[in-house]
Image (cartoon, rainbow, N blue to C red):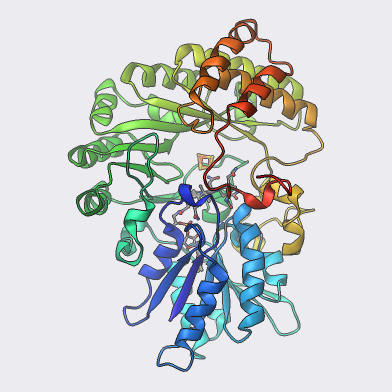
Length: 501
Ligand code: B12
Ligand code: SF4
């Protein structure tokens, strides 16, 4: 039996299908027993659950062959390290495997960790299945593409790149292996929201993005008919009424968008996806109408900057005019746009911040329903030709314990300390966001009480009108007073100051 672990990554009430480990399990040979342990489940002691499974199967016909964990940069890494150490300390003979985005981007610290035996980089389904042959002694690990490990003596073997396949060539999500009903929270989209990923990779090359570091510049999209078939099951059997598509780049082009609309329309779902503004500006009004009728409710686009020069530097391939046009089109068709921006241009940080804030004001005027998402620029390792040559990004930690330091955790969640992005500039952006979100409360804001939102709207009116964002202490205090204490105060628990509720 194999134990597939999704270490805690978020507050239990925000848990979504653990797609990464579901995908690995679904691809195992039918004779292979496996089970998922999801750290995002409320009240679960993950280490105890894993130990119980190991003990229960010890000496039986099918003992645990490996414990395999999915690890994303950020808080999930913070949970995964102590968890892995605990498992290894109590069960030293059981092979420990890590997969997921963290090891894909930063293999060295993973391979330096004595409590991790194998690292799967990139798409994991086939690599993991082949690793099982290695564990059985039937195969030389050096022949498995995508597999990395520590050799005798401590040096690292970095397996050659695994050429990945599209979702259409992989098994359907194994919904029978999870309690589906417990993963359908109420969201802005509906009462029972699910998640789905219909494509892999992205063909673009934005130079701040970690996706191409892991998958290269390629995208493979599954036939929309197959997507609809999987979703139909969730609608019919589990009453799902809405879905977030997790694809990095959901629409390939207009023809694909129309096929998506045709496939989604009969399902009656309300849905959200991420796509690019340049793609959206090529859609005809008829395509927008069809998408709207098919349940297209919200769209997330990386707008990134208010300057075409900076967009060129980012190799984003879009213009501010295109973003403006999408703001107008979404308004026309009643779709909520979420525009995300990356602050922190290394060359002219001050000018870039002011310019982008001014652009966001214009966008908000063009479409008042627009939602703002902000990030601070965080360099990610830039891929060269193969995984073996990924830039190590000089200065990033070589040991996992160092990655757990709050400074590095902030780095991973896109709030890094960088020489050109000082606290003053970050505060400027944060103050702007507070004034904007007070004046126009976000549809996502479930943390502020209703009276707080009303008072915030009134108190921020003059500031927003004048463009005065400096130190909005009254709004900050109001937010704190009106804050609803979460019923499960576990979001990013490891980042909260000690003693905080
Ligand atoms: C779901 C998700 C989340 C969820 C996590 C839910 C969970 N795991 O329980 C939440 C919302 C919590 C989240 C948060 C964050 N996320 Co996130 N997230 C995603 C998202 C949208 C989908 C991932 C997914 O499930 N895909 C479907 C599965 C099937 O694919 P997969 O995960 O790639 O898994 C494959 C391989 O990676 C590998 N694999 C993965 N795990 C394992 C395990 C084993 C054992 C093996 C063998 C193989 C293996 O094989 C799998 C099958 O091929 C991706 C974007 C994307 N589309 O990839 C971003 C993404 C992974 N997130 C990202 C980031 C940055 C974050 C945050 C740091 C953002 C922030 N500012 O806070 C946070 C912090 C993470 C944390 N809490 O630790 C980045 C990572 C890139 C990078 N540079 O680091 C991505 C790529 C988004 C992006 N475009 O920037 N995230
Ligand atoms: S379009 Fe989005 S996912 Fe693709 S490389 Fe750019 S930022 Fe990354």
